[in-house]
Length: 392
Image 1 (cartoon, rainbow, N blue to C red):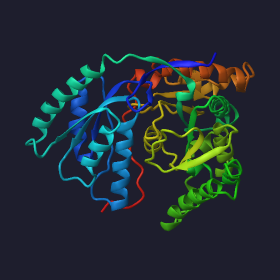
Image 2 (cartoon, one colour; image 1 turned 180 degrees about the horizontal axis):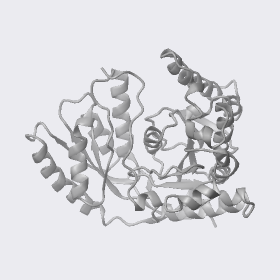
Image 3 (tube, one colour; image 1 turned 90 degrees about the vertical axis):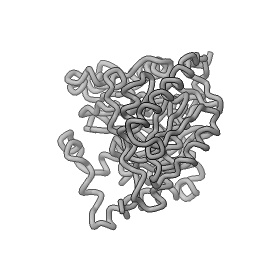
Image 4 (cartoon, helix red, strand yellow; image 1 turned 90 degrees about the horizontal axis):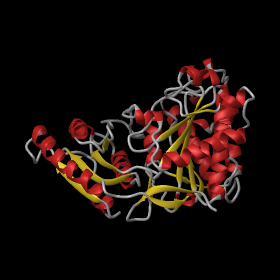
């Protein structure tokens, strides 16, 4: 019998692991209103980003697309957009495209309402109604082929590539074999290993997907060179070096292990939703947590598997983040933040496959409603949107 989990089936066919009302500020100037609404109404989440105005047109479109994809997430049952009224993002397009998924969407404009206090009052009333409206939705049993898993590693050390990344790679292969979707990114951590990924691309290293992998790595390096910097001086991070990683190539070789072994189907742009994609995909993202977690949530991922060696505790507002710790000493120190101890591979107590099966079972429980540790303590507010141009 095929594996299953219990999720919220949305009108557009996606399946969510959570059932939040998303209160989405269309610009950083609306953050405080969105946050005040969420403090008043249980069952709401918000995305406190720093974008949406005084940016170049491509970045304003990128921010708009990112916020739309967050609104389309299967983990949100309804959406309230909080607009200032004069921002650079297209809040009307946000409203229309999210509404097209079949969700109940509302929008308020702070300036039109006469200011912050009026906007908070009306927004709180609307959010309360939306929460009550979706609170009666029931979970349904669905197959694992409906899973969209995001993966990442952070605060890495030598144990990440030897244990926790291997566990996630095991799960990635298992899910792809069952018809699910797996998304990995961190273009900065392909450097030195991009040829290995390109060889796994559908169509081969010289095909469109393989060439796209080389293209995003070269573009990332070119952005650093444009301001007179060498990527290799920013990576590995000081924490990575203290954890025993000597070079970006060594870090990359360990990082790409978490993608497993399956063919890479394509490359997604940062704001792009992955609904309808199957198999293993790359998303072009940076490595830093606030930006990559947002980019992965825009894919429509119901959750993320996050590998760490030194201990990275943060999560994301609407996407559960399961922390797999490769270092047994870190797990002992940070057990209240880490969800699974893959350090037992390092000590010889368990095999990669045994811990992989434990993590897979944990995944199914989280998809069906079990909280991760960062969810339980509410450690998920530090998010942002990755932009490419200057603030003007």
